[in-house]
Image (cartoon, rainbow, N blue to C red; front, side, top):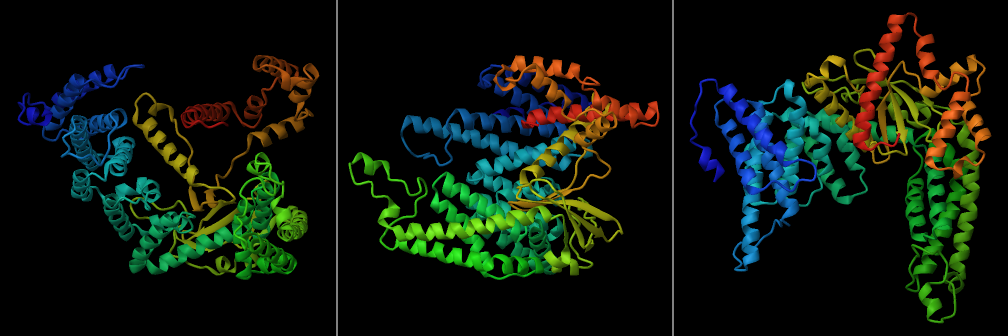
Amino acid sequence: NVVDMVAHCDRGPQDRGLRVACWLKLGEWKVTDSIQPGSAPMPESLQTEVLTAYKRATASTNCGYMAWHAWALINFRLAQQMHDNLGYRAQTSYNNNDPSLRSSSLTSKTLRNHVIAAVKGFVTAICLGTKRWSASVQQDMLNFLTCLFNFGELPEVSATINNVINSVHIQAWLGVLPQLLARIHIKSPSVRSVLHPLLIRLGAQHPQALMYPLSVHLKSPVVERKVAAESLMTSLKTHSNALVEEALMVSSELIRVAILWLELWWEGLEDASRLYFGEGNVKGMLDVLIPLHEQLEQGPMTRRENEFYRSFGRDLAEAHAFVKEYIRLTTSNGGTIPSAGGFSPSLEQSEAGQSPALPFRRNAEAEAALNQAWDLYYTVFRRINKQLPGLTSLELSQCSPALQRARNLSLQVPGSYRVDGSYVRIEKFIPKVQVITSKQRPRKITLRGNDGKDYVFLLKGHEDLRQDERVMQLFGLANALLARDRRTNQYDLNIKRYAIAPLSHNAGVVGWVPHCDTLHSLIRDHREAKKVPLNMENREMMKLAPNYDLLTVMQKVEVFTEGLDRTTGRGNDLYEVLWTKSTNSEEWLERRTKFTRSLAVMSMVGYILGLGD
């Protein structure tokens, strides 16, 4: 009705730009009034006024990006409001005579109209968006995807999306590629019919952009996601077969370097021990250990793996035999492997007055087999534990000959691909890999690009970097918003970003930011030069309050403040470091300003994200 009412509105003043701006401002004022803290959802009368204002803004010829963005956004928000508050259900029977269902039917029709208007509006806005509106365009892309994933099952919505989606330039989707790939296993046929052809078109024009992200999904433990990724990779092979093979090789070999068999078994045995001895979860323990045994049985492929096999292969094979025997003895009489409680008697047995015949008493042989397996596992774990501290450097010839031999690849250096299709190719991998001596032992690995430059990365195992990748996306959005707003763009507020390329659900590479110091190293070196103990504050606090852990929060703050006052320099180490490391006052002021501004921006974005550190 709103659309019909304003479709033939008066063209009015010749200055259409001013007229559009007036309608947008009117709509903005009305929306602002409706979203005050604690206010109820927007009433229908106000919805009509707001929709009328924004629709009149879009009715003008060449109304521009902001008019379509505002029109799409208000329809999107109203659709979400209806979806959340009115109990919308996608599959509603429109032919039922029940009055409540007729009301629901009307609701779903209104919601459908809002979603369709939002979809058309977002697509038009995305097509009109320029670099000036890049931050808003990215939000439009994400909101469009929300419409697809939440309402794409509705036939009318699906048809509308299919009709308009080709209007968007294909490279625009590169900015939301992680979100597209995260849903490749979605079951809805109507959503898949939009998503998969889009990814295939994207892969045809920008195959490099899909290589690393898609290789992650190929290793997914979720079967549906893995199958969907294999289907997409097959379509990529039709035009980029060599590139696909290189990407799969590099991805799998980097994971091999990130997590050696030595570390794989150390982590696996530690997890299995916690599950078995801590939680009594025998099934969980087996779920951890059996895949490791299966991998070991496939045989070693590198010199490092050969050394591991010679050192531990026999013991682990014997342990595997005992585990198999345990499984056979436990399940042969219809028994089940316990997932909690281990070999303890069940509560039901005790309450029923039954004999507390423990499972291992009923099947002493099975329990003995598992004990023998753990004797061997413990021996292996102790020996691995002694070897790990000596792991300070690696040679690719020993842990990944395939990477050492790789030359002049078609594959891009992670993070170098740009929207215009330009990228730096990998020429070779530097043979020496440094192992950083922290808890997870990440690797410092260097790639040489075809531009002659060396690109350094932190190769991390035992960590899922997919969330870090999303955080970098958010940082990019924050940078674009800060650069666009005239109140912030004059202060050079910007978050330093770096490349993040997940390789699997537990490994990935992170771009190395050069010429940086940690706060710890700066303060440590400063205090060593001044002969001040690194833990001076802690010593003073313990003198003041030996029972510090029992104090209230405010008491802890008082003790901490007093401890700082008693410390040489009163905790102003960073202030002094910035001064002493600067060659002149101009350099000091520049460094202090950059640090202050970047810390301010990161603190605000960190607060939005809910970061603890």
